[in-house]
Image 1 (cartoon, rainbow, N blue to C red):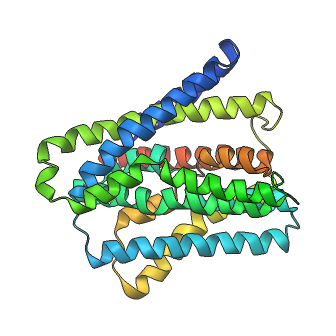
Image 2: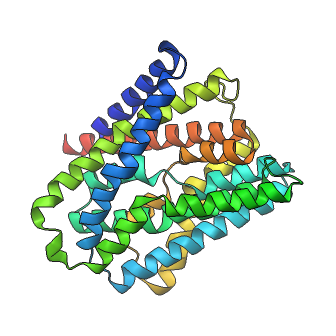
Length: 318
């Protein structure tokens, strides 16, 4: 796990250097190429192999449904706190909600799950990423952006365009189509020989994904949106607590009443805020400063947590 922390730190640093040391626009083109590679090559391959081999038990299936319910409940709680004690305006409220419901399961938690859990549990993690996190981005985050952002404020046509963007995001996502195929085919169509390459593909997501994070955070810092280190304001702190503590605890608490929750779901539920929240904020007019700060803080806390667990494991061996 120390290797994971080191890879993340180096990848973020590489992304920052690309943004600051290359000609204008070069880093953005690299970011686009990396995102397209992950979206169209790595993630479809990982999703196909692992979902085709997934044994969908009642606990696994109900766990996914309960994760969606817990995610929605955490988002509603963030909304109540934003309009109540925090007194946030609409763009900041929407940004806080998006940071709470959009987790970085793909770039961060899937490689961690591949390192910590069995192949069976890892397949469950892939199902969580595809069936919970992906819809949370395409449907949940963009819907919140359309409701709270300034991009379409007072203009019905822009609202319709935002709805069209949500639909377009879903239709252009190849992982969704691959998931449907993987659920339909027999397990023999995803032979054992593909399992190891699929795990290697997941580990490739880690540096590539965090190079994207580094470019994005450096871009926001250059625009004045993000200070390094960002201030831990009350809204950011509340978003961090809800994303990394309340969401997994809510999922575990609800699940304890009805099912035996797969342990890997708790790991994914506590993932840091996803870098895609910045994309949503840009497109819909949400508070970019709050969004970028939440990404930075949740990612830093997750890295410290992984490093702490690694050191405890090393000490226990000694």
